[in-house]
Length: 275
Image (cartoon, rainbow, N blue to C red; front, side, top):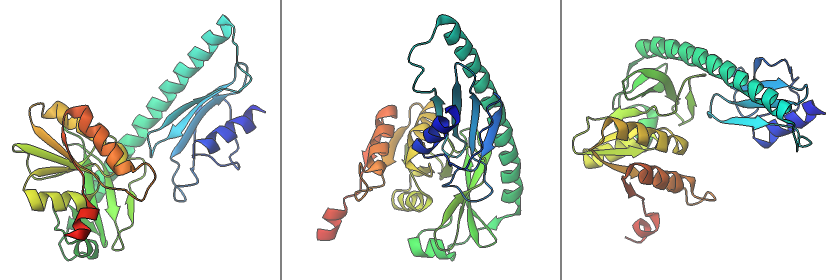
């Protein structure tokens, strides 16, 4: 029963597959999340189904972590709570150790690929389509290569952009709080999601711009940059996902701006259509 309940929890979190053979031995195991491309083992779990049963699981790609217990474990004795606490602590240690190893491997691969890549030019089909230039990015076998670094300048992972605009990341790389910097901060620092938006903002304003790659990474990047530049004026340029329920682009940008005391810029396509 525990195995099927755990698989249901994986499914509910958007990470699992009912075909996964669960090994509940209190060790960390990796698996392919159905939404990820074949070969990528971005999913992970640590499970123990002896009473009191529990599991910790998550995704390297999204950084999400979940804790699971069977629904029937409504009441635990003090002894069971102590056992559960020790198991969860051990699971966190295993997760952190594996994550550190995965990130280290990704840093090495990112460095090798970055060295192999050549400078990108504005003639790349994606840049032509978006009408933007190449700012600190490279080209590797026809794909744009965009570095993701932390505030110390360490390269952690790479984003690849194909000619048709399809975007992928280096497997296992750390993306959280990492960004691509365009320009040198002087007076105002802008922050946005994607490269094309960042290149557009930089070209239009002349202000240094940090590309966070997606809306979920806006706040982590904003907080990291605020710690590095405590007195610098910041502006978060939102993606307006008006056709998506909840408008995640504007919602995440507003949250990031509030977190660091930054200004918020939101495009108004309705107004532009009437001008």
